[in-house]
Length: 120
Length: 107
Image (cartoon, each protein chain N blue to C red):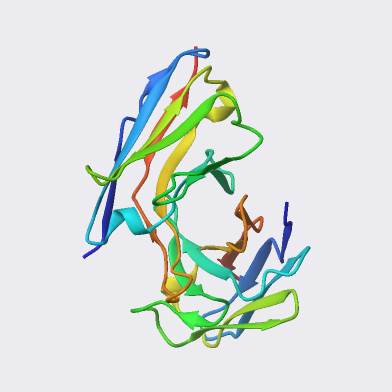
C-alpha cells in the first residue's frame, strides 16, 4: 500500500529555518514527480513546490521562491523541503504529495501532513 | 498561471439532495482535473481524477464531467458523510492551482 509520512514540523520564530522530510513507500519513488502543498489555518490549498523524479528539475510558487528549496534522495525514497527566512504567513499544514500518473493514467497520493507554526 | 474559479463557496443541502459544484479553468487543462473532499483536521481525500475517473473506493454517487474548460462534480443523493469541503485542482501544469473550495452544509 502506498504511504507518505511527513515529519519535521515545529514551532519556530520568524526568520528561522526548518527542514521537512517525507518518506515514501509502496511505489517506485524515482518514477514520480513530488510536490509540497500547504494549507494555512482556515484557508484553502496552496501548491508550494515540485521536483521531477529523475532529472530533479524543480518548480516553485512565487510566494516561496528564493526562500524554500525542494530536494529528493531517490536512494532513500525521501523528499525534503528546506525552508529559510520563515514568515508568519508560512504557518500551515504541509502535505507531501505524489504526482498523478500521466502516461498510464493514475491517481495521486497525499500524506497526512506536518504542522509548521511561525510565531514570535 | 491557470486560475480555477469554483462555485458556489457554500452550499446548503439536505440528505438525499442532488448537489452540483462547478469549476472553471482560465485556460485549457485538457482533462487534468481532480476533485477532493476534506473534513476538518484531515488531509484532502481524492474523489475524482482526469475529470471523470472515480477514485478506487469512492461511492458511485459521486461523478465528474467536463465541457471545455468547465468541470462539474455531482453528488446524486447526498449522504450524512458528504457534509464537508470540496476542492477542484488542475494538474495540467505547474503551478498546480486549486479552486477556493465549496463547503457543503446541512440546510
